[in-house]
Image (cartoon, rainbow, N blue to C red; front, side, top):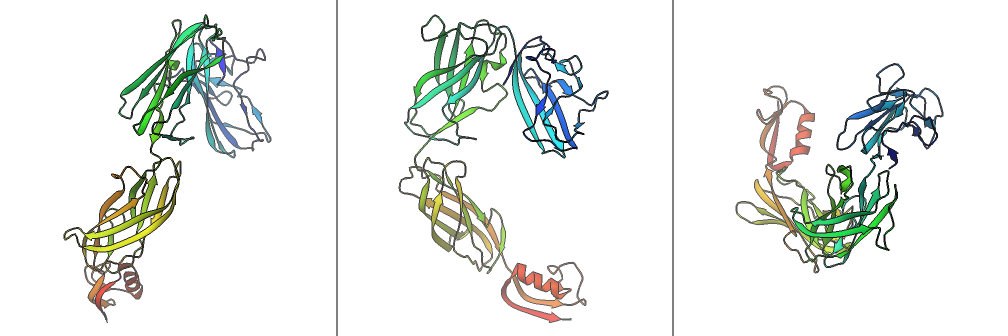
Length: 413
């Protein structure tokens, strides 16, 4: 984000210090509603500048002119306001401009971070490598692969920086510290120049590897003797999610869930169902033509009442790494509690503990025996209490939903 000077008026009095404003890529419609505020310095989320309708405290501003692409609020309120609509950060640190658009405009929220500079401040900017296992990369490293550890730092202060230290910390998914690699930046070293205000530097911590699959996290910590802002010394920031990366096997498939019948579902005896299983690829490579099996057993006697073998065509890796698979038609004739299991198998899958998933469901009888149809015996809504259908529609709906388990007699009254 941008870097502003502390205790400096950004009020448009000089071109280099404009007031807060918005730019649209396309002309806005009349009736667009805009809210615009500045919060910080982080970790504080206090509002220090907020645009309002002139002469009011209304922070939802309507655009009344067609074709606007650049918009500057005419008035603002808050401790960071100068000269009606300008901004001045009296404390150094990281701030956020928070914009919300609605009404006739394309709705959405935008957050733009920026920095108000102290005299001396070196910030940990970002982890460059490893690639993250979550959005937007969804990347995984094969076990034993050498992983380049890179981080970026920036001089966000007002003065030159000659010397500082950056540390990369690697932790496992239990938050146990596994490795700590220190890098010293010193302008007396021919490889390092004096870091001017705004300059960035990519730190190379070398390569790192592990043969243990799992999710890891990386953190950058800057130690600068003259530093005046602690919040940005660490990335990810103290109030942000961890930066994670993942080491995985080339092939690892999981049986994740049985969607039909779902866990605890009650189905009708004798009715046809097409069971559906869900499988997940947590490995590195896409996998095709995988053997999968579903079995259903009586939960009490362990008698096998259903089995289906299929081939799952594809399960991709990455962001869209789940695949539904439909098994052969299933009919269970007897009431009771049943245990359904799905299993997926691949010859190169080294982790077998997650290949099977099971849960139980219930089978209850459909319609069987004698019922009446008409108003004579109608004593209760539905048919389960008085075994009477008031109308033909009620009877047809029951036949469709509940099915028929055995001999059925309908007496007209």
